[in-house]
Image (cartoon, rainbow, N blue to C red; front, side, top):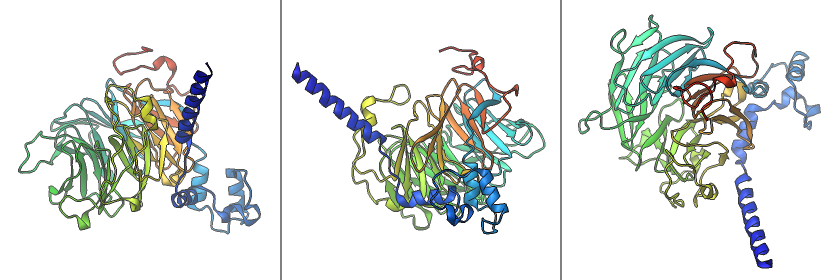
Length: 470
């Protein structure tokens, strides 16, 4: 009996050690300092006399310091603005933006926040006017769609929308044309950009990820043929083809405004960096290891140095490309007999670690099952990119503090997977798009008597059923 108790205590101690390992969080000092500098009130605003103060400053105190001249006469800095803004996280609601009879797959605010675009399974995309009560600005019926709208991208000037599906054709539609209804090649032309080459047959691959360059001259895509393609819009042809990974390329994006550097993520568990200025053959500029399974999404911080990735290993990782290596130096422990499309994540795999983890930090708590769930940095203007937020298969939006790694808030109401979400670039508004068919918005404050506010009696597990069904 004593031996049994000793064994139980040993097992309990091992479990506690594993739990401590999961809870341990440390962010590299440099990126921690950069994030704090962009999201916390500056020394000038709070005054030298209160430099050691620990209690948070209120918006009133910061405004008072500015008006009384104690802020150095320069007004609010960008960090002061972000400090005030990030204290107003959009956690109230949700209110309905739209209720559609098909699963919502993707959503995205325009760069100035005036438009919201949402794509649905089937052949529907809707553009909403965020400044006019979320009215439908454009109702788009897509062309030649395979399965679903897999991704959407607005051009930087907000004139054109690119949409993809599981086919090698990207279609472009003018979102500023006069008509509200846009039926492909019936009421409007949806120009098709063919990404197949001379040695490939049309329909040979599907596109998972689409991004415009910051100057709007190029579009980059990642596909299930393990490749990255860059399309030159002026030349009207594919200018770059890279066989980038050994499995599907689920995510690709431009690193910064220059357009020279690309980040990609794949089902081979790797993140790669590509510098088009010195692209030799199909060799990447560097590889970043640390994930244990397929990468589902990548978001760049926009500085050409840091980015985050979401993964089927149920983790978001933060990366610094200066830590990349030229080769894969070690392989992770394989998660066997598991498929994220229909199985729960194995409990023991939560404790697996990559033997050569090059990431700066890991964020845990959300769930990535059944679909390519997306994650993002919060807006620079209103939060100083202090937060990382993500959709989740547990029907919630998770918001993490980038510096501490803690969950700041979990937004729960939806009845099904939240595949995508988007934070307004200037206002405390977050929109979630779910497989329950709802596109919903969350605010820092709002009118509870607004008839668009969603109640428990409107929840459902999918868009074809109404009321509770679980």
